[in-house]
Image (cartoon, rainbow, N blue to C red; front, side):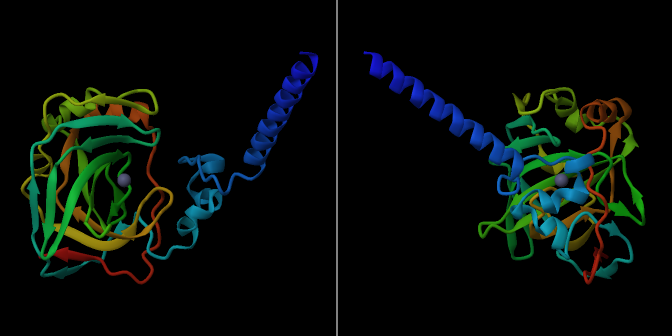
Length: 257
Ligand SMILES: [Zn+2]
């Protein structure tokens, strides 16, 4: 009986010791874990590339996003075909933005290429600038092809009329990080993007860690609007969630004619 209790105590201490070691090693060597990043301070954009070996592209990548869209060359680009469906959705506060996850939302087709629409999310101010000017808000519509290639459509917002198509999103954004709420009714991504589908295009990366490259970027030329109260509600949750502008390097920006 007695020896059992001692064994129990020893085992307990051993477990406690191992847990402390694990905590210490976690604190001292955060790189392999690559967890926490933010938009300012010690874990801000200038440091992303050092927070994890998985985040190296943030530091050494040469085709990073966002960029300042300027000096685009006019080109005969294929039209964007928005083969989307009205869809159920959920609104997630992931700690970095509000993300709207879509279910069976349909596809974006560009020429021979086809991508499924997965989600959209917001940045304030807009991450991409046009001729040096950022907009108050952008939505990034994230698509994925069967081979894994990502295509993102950027929809810029000027402050103006309330955005009626997104009113249920702006009215129901969860305040707590990691919280999710089911959307009311359905959303129609085609309506949200609108009918003016002229666009800029270039190659780039994810704008958040791990900053992976090979992303096909499409930014619509025509902005839509967001109401002052809608913008204020987003800013209250995320006062600034835009990565700084990255160098263009050898990339070319094209714009549809
Ligand atoms: Zn984004």
